[in-house]
Length: 373
Image (tube, rainbow, N blue to C red; front, side, top):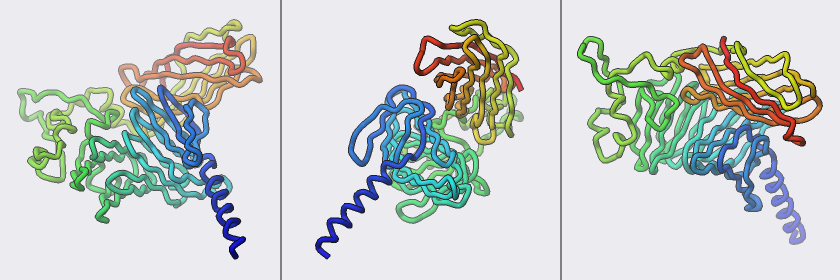
């Protein structure tokens, strides 16, 4: 029996090391300082587009940095600047479409769109300093600010189990979709997103002279004077949220539009390092319900063959945060970037792109475009 103990210990260590080094997802966007610390050997690496993230990785973003990850089950995780995320567990079997996931936000903020794990009934949780979030197939955000946790549910629902075992439910079929939980455990539910969730900020106009045209926003489940306590809530929520909401802003339009819209190139200007460009085509699917760009493609020909790029991303205010997930030129692998914004209204998207062969960066192409439904 004594001889078996070292063997069992070794097998357990090997099992843990193997699990820790299993892929959890892929980096689809890394801007600025995006670092991953391997929990099994404490080695740190700079993440770049297409890099694999593992369990257990601890991922950090620096000042003016951000990252997006496509996880094994098709879920998306976006990290804001100055954030720290621990991937405690992310397992998914592509054959059975079953798995489980547990991640922990230690600092900053994240935006998550769940994938097949939750869709197929698996366990998916997000741990925060005030409790653990269980999701019910959803698109949500978490932001940590000075010990407080801010929550926003854009689609679906979440259940946050606090340390005292009380449960805060937000989203579909609940009275509120937004909340702040203070470091001391106080819960403030609201019908409006806090300023920390800037992709849902709406333009506010001062009160007009005509009082009949003014509507007072319903702000919170508790009395307004509770916000004036020493909890710092009023420092986080804009005082302008108590005033009239203008319906003319672009962000209002984004919040109100529903469904998936397919855009195509209506005009473009493209140059290639190896000759004239022909047969240009570009498409983009924008899912306003989930705030994502699930699919986009660019294709055109030059003397070296066909350029092709696939991309996806998220909506952030008027900006579309996009990342190229695959690119090629003829038989050669390529890489690139796509930047785009809504122009004046949601029926016009404008932007530019850059592509180059990975093994021969001097072979490249770039251009600008305008897309319309």
